[in-house]
Image (cartoon, rainbow, N blue to C red; front, side):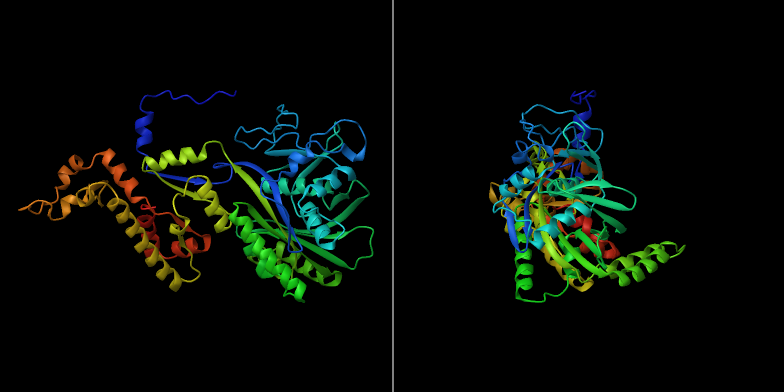
Length: 498
């Protein structure tokens, strides 16, 4: 209806005032779920730059299928991300909304693809095996639905994952268009020419534990005696599974790709690594038989299939990496700033690389101040965790005390807080007063009178003072914490000061 929400109760502000903690995801909440490829790494070389928008360039690109219709064609017809945000066409007019999560239409044809590849900085040469392999991986390693757009001649991609839609669209714009899917095959069209069909042998689906997805395919109408595995995923999931570099060039490509991944994360971009593996057909058939048997087990089925997936996803050949931008929703920094000023603690969960998460937190206003003051709770063993946890706790408590000490009027204005039931009491009730001659120690108030000394306003003031630390916890470390009863109990106390 395009109508704003209206408050219909006068007690809403008071209810909101009772909120002390906000837990949020990032994608689609802080960000707009509006994802587009910004940079691409192939053969250890970067293509594209921050601020470059491939989808905008193609908005005034060539007609579909290379036919000269005399009219420019929109690439992205519409995208509805579930938050009410709508994409606009090249002419600036809003297009019709689609009912799916994400729906985009891209042009087909050699002219549009060549123009897109030239738009990169530098131009992308798909005649190289590395570039062709990377774009083929993007076109085939996915779970997107595809339909032909009868009006424009383009293809429309629909899927629940905005990352996948963005990558499949990018591959299509660059000339490697996924155009059809059946129960047993995927079809790709290169530069608007002849369609190439691949038999889909096995799909190893993405999961939050695996952090990667793979598809094993065999090209039809060829005498190839091998099956190709294409895989994409987080660098932490792909890099350890790469084969050892066989020569100096492969070592240089690997090092440069790792450097670019770090550079992308510093820019706040979402990254994925692309790889492949060619498996002799006889070896694949033997593995496939074992995988089919595992899928029919009544007990231990999941573990057996995961072990076989782990077995085949080894000795990978690096193809490249992608960097996707997901822009922030409007007024996110202002909103988080007001929550912080009100003494509300905000925690955000995300599946991004840690450095990507930190940079997005800074651009969103979740983290402020010197980035060197951000505390990282990272550990890979129980012994390391105990030491890191102790160091972080000391830093957090020191930060909280320093925040209070920086207030006006020096020692007399210094405030610290002690949790007592549901109330925070000013530290001055628990220390000797030395500001005036003859001052005496004040006894702490009884529990009966706690409300007198700790109004809600003062509670939030103390919270705002204490919440000066900025903490990042990675997923592996959080698993270790939640497996230890003692550390699990310490985490909330630490989190209350961040």
